[in-house]
Amino acid sequence: MKLLVIGGSQGIGRSVVLQALAAGQVVLAHGRDEAALAELATHGAHTIVGDLRESATLEALGNRADELGIDTVVASQGVAGDGALTTLTPERIRLVMEINTVSVIRLYHALRATLLERRGIFVVIASQASLRPERFDSAYCASKWAVLHWVQSMAALESPHGVSVRAICPGRTKTALFDDAMAGFAAAAEMSLEEYTEMILGLIPLRRFAPVEETAAATLFMAAHAPRPTVLAETGGEVPYSIAPFLVGGHQG
Image 1: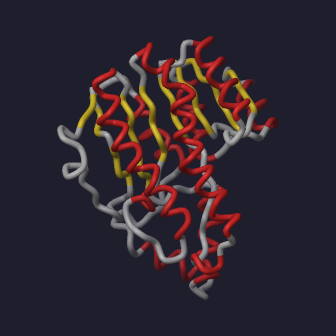
Image 2: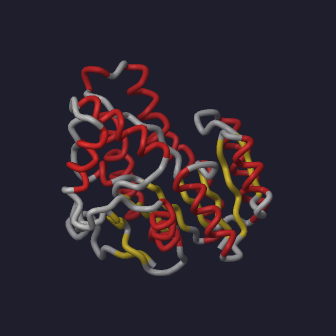
């Protein structure tokens, strides 16, 4: 596998990069944090810095992916969109949709020729927030719902051409983004962080949040060049999900 990880400088993306490198894979890590990418380079990653909202970054990613023979892409970029819809500014909503949804679609089209040539895999890290609404997470839910349904549509369209488009919908994974969101949810619910955390843990059958390494491993499972479900809901049982109504066959080779 020759893997491009978008949003590879932090969170789930960074853990995906490190696990892939440890397995001997060629990895191109993208991000906006130059220092974090420089640290990944010491582990053997190729790196590229840039903002996915800029056409120049997409062009550079396409060129580097072609040079390195990339055959698998993990789109792990994302920003939080917590807060009741009435409290979010139009500018914030637009930013969340641009980064979490539109940039994924633009990325795919920038890399499509390379993926077609190599019968590649394109994995989007969505969220369990794409599977059900959350009271204080409206913009994030909307962005992840949109990208999940884009994945399902593209999976059906691209499978005959040899490209597998997939999504993983992780549950609550311990990252800096998650910690910030939890603090925001607690404040919106007028609860202490400890009270809110205990309430949320009560909703999860496993009674724990996912370590980032666990979600990264599940992401790499979805990135394998082997039959996989189009959508994997790795939620600790909090949000049960079946792909059966959405995609004939349910699996991709």
